[in-house]
Each structure stands twice: as C-alpha cells, then as structure tokens.
Amino acid sequence: MADPTTRQPIEVLYFYRTQWGTHDEFLRLFRRNHWPILQHQLRAGRFTNVELWAPRFHGDGRSDWDVLVSITYRDWAAIQDHSDAHLARELYPDQETFRAEEQRRFEILDAHWDVVLESQPLDA
Image (tube, rainbow, N blue to C red; front, top):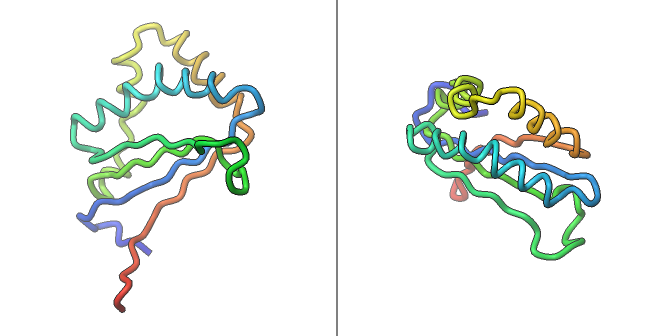
C-alpha cells in the first residue's frame, strides 16, 4: 500500500460507463464543466498530467467502461487536498446551472469507479 507521506507522483484512473446513447452528452458536460477545473489544478501544480481515453471501437474488450480519465497527482498530499468545490464556485458564477449539469453528468452513468495505482518494481 502506498505510503501517505510519499512525495512520489500518484496516478489515479477514473472509470465511467455511460448509459446507452449518452456517451457524447457525458463528454460534452465533462469538457464544459469538469475539464476547466482539472486544467486549473494542472496549472496550480496539484496535477502533473490529465488524460481522457475512450475505446476506439464500440464493443472493444469487456465493455466495463467507455470513458477513462487518468490523473497524475503531484504526490499523496495533492490527493488529500480537495479544492474542487472552491474552484467550481470561482469558475462558474451560475452555480444553479453548474450543479444541474453536473447532476445530469452523473445521472447518465451506469457505473463509476476510481483506481489508485501503485507502481510495482519488475526487478524485485
């Protein structure tokens, strides 16, 4: 298990499975409402990298997910720093619309889970 005092980068994978027919809507809402928050966190140094992935073809693999967001946090302390709500209030003055769209983004999901990765040396 990762040492919470570590100064090493920590990668977290965020998996999403959207309801049939809502994939494009989810991506549109994600890009409009969540991506600016993530960009702010990148500029501030909390994150060192953010990537968004989707299967190239319908039906690839087990179909457990159709959107994957990979966030590399600066270190364990950056994971514990929850400043997204403050940033959302700062970036989106129309909080009523923002909250409604974020609620919709999660309503159209069938599943969502996070996986904190831990690097394992190959030459033990």
